[in-house]
Length: 174
Image (cartoon, rainbow, N blue to C red):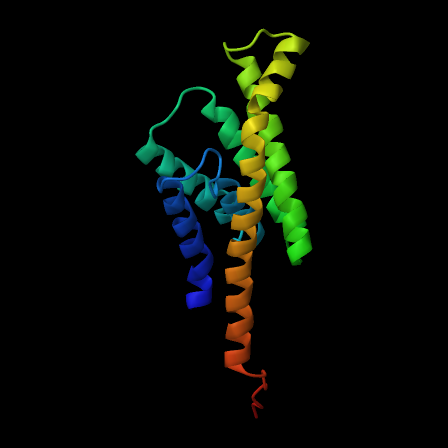
């Protein structure tokens, strides 16, 4: 029973961490989307992570039309987790977390370029991506840390649960 609830509890805990003081772009939301996509069943893989983001945004304050690109990035990261982390290893999680960071960077800064801050030219696009470089390091680091923690806790709990249950011996029915 507790193993069924665990991924939801981890997602709620990660969303609450977003509300705590943290350095710029060192937050668990990409990892939360990646984790939810990988471990939650069916539509819940999308609803729970995006709902957690929306609830934390409701507390922090919604921030305008650019947030549509942020949610689009999270949606893509959920899909990434769904298709790449069914079978996982620490190195696979790390690679996928870095891929999630890159996707978030590319999608959200493309959206910024489409807004009013940058000219809609190649130079403006380059300017949008260049302005985000100082934040990218924290994004990668937080995605690595939070992804490894979320999957590590989840997988360790599953292994402990299997050990506790002991070997499965089917009952004979006559």
